[in-house]
Length: 404
Image (tube, rainbow, N blue to C red; front, side, top):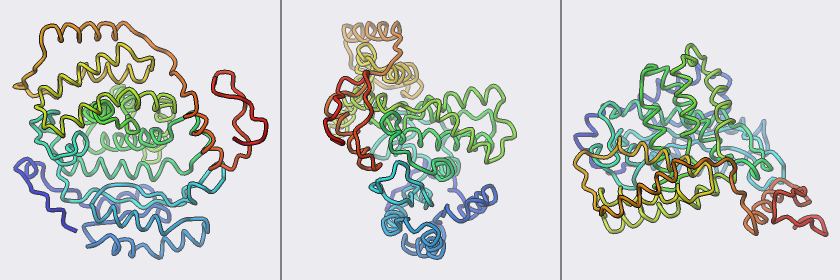
């Protein structure tokens, strides 16, 4: 399927896309153990998603034979649809969400790389905006990052990072840990280790990625993909010379280790999503009213400083302070701002207050939202009784009968 994307000189300047046949062969040379459970669909070889899925029929049948619980129809349909849209993803083949087991294995994955139509400019646009934007517009992307093959490498390595790291889902862990954010930390960290190996340890693309992941959490509410903290640890390890001569398997294991230390708790994810609902409104209004970039940027800064001065969430405070300190690197030189001196003064006061704050513990989700979330997790994992009593959770009352 052709997407009808109009190319610009910036797209052409990004150069060619990735040679997928070569990249796929490299992956199986690195991870021969995954030839039977990771299947990469090559849109440079197959015209449609169903043609691509059909090409792995024998392999999928083998998965089904070895793992009768594997749910193939939905995975096939999802993979074919994402392939048609040339949208990168890693499709899990598991036993389904309602198996009523405490832990669900992921039997296999179907990986879809980004389509050739997506240049570096367009992939940057997908990250930071819902519409194609110039590299010279907010947020600015340096010429050195306008490398389409590099972006395609990153996206493919990210999806393969999913495929080789999280191999099961512990449902009860979702009460305390954001498994989605943990998976994204694993995938981004693995991809950036491979990036250093491919493009050199002096590359600054990982710093750029850490910043735009943070930017997306603030501006778009994409908290699940907030991998900034994990990437920061990796970047420091690279500076300390601790990433030299890693095998692909060691890169995978290190990514899992870093993600375990740096991913968001369930409470932190919930708190960040609530806090950044206000900045998401700025994004939505700007898209609807075509707000000038200068006005939009100042609105983001104003609200980020306000949130940072008031939040009780350490993760939210961290993201806001990072946003305010790094946004200057992505603002065009000629960007006009519309704030009065009084408004700038108020913003500075909030920022000063935020910088003086140090928060330690995430406020827990309470009330009916937590009751219902935990009840759903218990049903999905086959647990017949409610969660054990926890004095730290004010919502909890010991049920008179098993279950809720």
